[in-house]
Length: 382
Figure 1 (cartoon, rainbow, N blue to C red):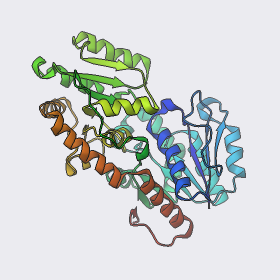
Figure 2 (tube, rainbow, N blue to C red):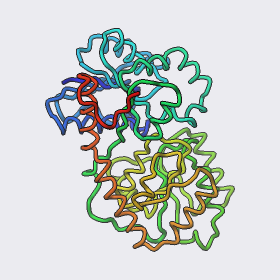
Figure 3 (tube, helix red, strand yellow):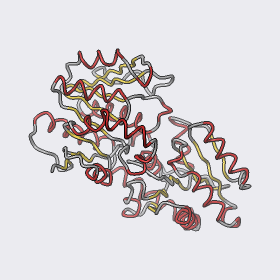
Figure 4 (cartoon, rainbow, N blue to C red):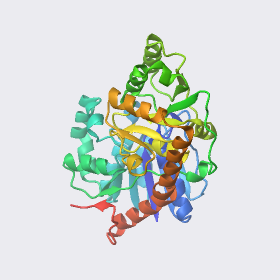
């Protein structure tokens, strides 16, 4: 079998999708080393990878012009002999090219929507998205052989919008071997609360700062918040200004993004991970925190009811007050009580979200798309 993946960028600054796609392809090769996979994307300053470990995998980095137009990418897809196309994310031209060419060549294709059809996401840059839906996006999605969602709530959002194609629900996965098995020693003086993600308005960082301000100083005195990531500099400066105006500069620090071992170190040092997001299709950083023995607070804007089901964190309503109460509850627990939650989180990820299990499901999906035999249980058909 041979497959062709397409995504606009795999630059390290682009967040979860770039990591998810490259890790998925590596995991598929680990599952079946004979499969040939190409990943086509646009050139960037700092791509996550330039090549795959398996020589049957190839990364194509293409020059591009305005709005992501790339003649070289179009030519590559038109000449492709791959049996199946798989595009990641919406609204941008590379996956549109892939969809259009797939229909022309009668090649089956899958689109992973990456949370971009969630209600909150559709309210952002609303005019641009309405225009894109009318011009190409609705057709690309409605004609897809299958749409890939990463959580049950995302399946519901897609169906609510009227799409009738098959939908595969496969979560993102974590390379568990990258995260040490040994239990970490958590920072104690002060204890750390970590936010590590793209610094963007949808992540709810203002709510975190506001909730922290409402907690009394006695409860906060042994704790510190680290906000780690990249984003728009104007927005980041506005957060820094808020921290200063709220007199929290000694308790909340905004830090530059880190990657690889440094990122894992931050996850393992933290006593608590917080993602107060308005909307998240999966939230790979939540899984990475849990596999690092760090309990999580996140909102119902993210599909993580498992935090409550497996007793490894708090799944709360969106807003300042619910976040304040969850922070107070977490901070009232002893280090050992938090570690019990951390151990539960590690087991959850090992059992349900390993990259190996995700790769096997994706290959099962690919086989069904190509043969229409043995429909997987995780595919919803109406």
